Length: 73
Image (cartoon, rainbow, N blue to C red; front, side):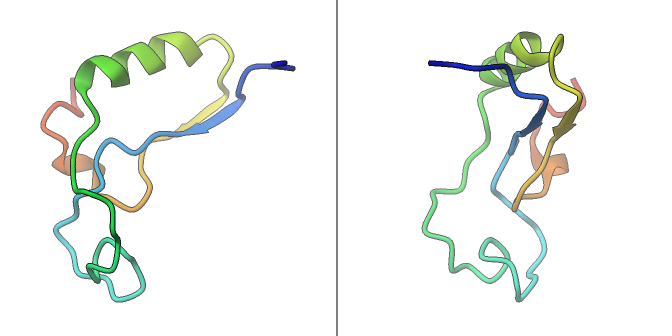
């Protein structure tokens, strides 16, 4: 059962990063996740589905979002 829609969401456009921060699993290469970008169509679909109910969208996590080739679109 779903009680409500998300007021806050975090989306990671990419888990790739061009820095080498020692405290970050992405930067220090201890992350076991395959490095890749979110598909642009999935990103657009997610934003269109949450835009009416979401107050805050955090568009990064452990990757550098500006490395995603379609982020500015």
